[in-house]
Image (cartoon, rainbow, N blue to C red; front, top):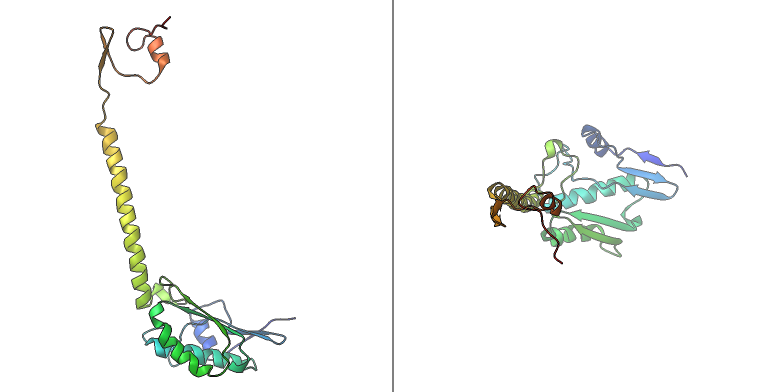
Length: 196
């Protein structure tokens, strides 16, 4: 079963503009697969700058166009995977989604990822919701790094401030040792004697 990649205008031109290595829709036998596409502005191909309702309409229209290009329709859809940046958009998206599947809607999953960035953007521009999610993550990382640096600095200062205290042993002043071999060889004080 050979795979056939189909061009869908103007979506394919928008994908070529951002050099995305994907096809908007592929077909193999009687199976059709539609790519997950960002909400391209139909006039300019830009992404973002629109309300969630408008973005949802664009996404559904793009999916409808891809299916029609492959010789199918929304009535043939078996499952939809929805990815959103915030759970607060759930109701608004459902209102738009229900208009395209009014009767016997297909199976669906709704995945919410607060830190998910928009794909295919130049210079890593993000949604406002994406920036909020990433800001929360960045603040957490900054607090963790600040605490880690404080602990390392405190440990380093403590090591620098530590000095061995001389102690008396059998009438001699010596520094504390950590090896019994050093004491037995007379490097520090008199050699130790085994008790009988």
